[in-house]
Length: 331
Image 1 (spheres, rainbow, N blue to C red):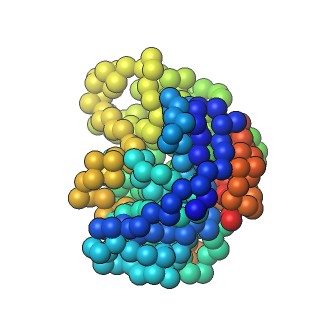
Image 2 (cartoon, rainbow, N blue to C red):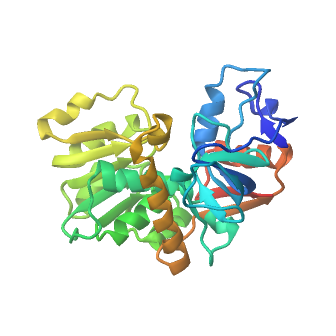
């Protein structure tokens, strides 16, 4: 089968390779890839790759395709099923014709939603779901109308679904956006209020009549906003992030007894935890939400052709750092 891998940290090292099509065992599915999406984690993983001419780095953390074979312990899927997933950071990704993926982190793909709209959603939805439900401990079945969340980088991939999930959970949502186009984007997704992360967030939030917020999601570089985060978080509030801290000190949150939480969507699969199956559950909910119109896809750019040229172009779009929504590649 054809795979598309890198031999060093430069995008220019992306080449086509041939390797044997794997045979699924245990709880693995073999999926014929029909579409994928590019995420910032693809770029971060590539840039941290030391290089290996013998075993190229095969990225791709969103996938959509058809199950062609199953391992002997698979219970929930069969050959011919259309599925979507975000994959496992310890294994080869979706930049290839066939991918092995554990059934516990897979769900049947939406039936009324196109592949273009579906394949953009797994990784960002799993990340946003774990942030909201597991790190912030928001119960969507409760009345959350008295709670406010600030989502920094609301127009990005994770922010675009976090806004929707927070809105569906009944939270008052403040999202950051920096252009008229992005302001409209986040409002259309369910943001109640919008502030500009290039300006003073403290002043803007206070001007809205809000002194502090219950929850803050840091979905971009936290350091430029750290003092604002510390000031705006409510005592006993929760700050959660998907990005690193360089100069910021978590201890700054101590006086407010505010909780801090990391989110890395791959942790459950990386350590083969029993809780891996929650990701399959979240993806089932996503499929229902997409087909039922409760969740809007965040696909904004579609490229065709699973090949070096298209994967390179798609990566360059994301790496430029100006994307609103998601870029997908359809075979």
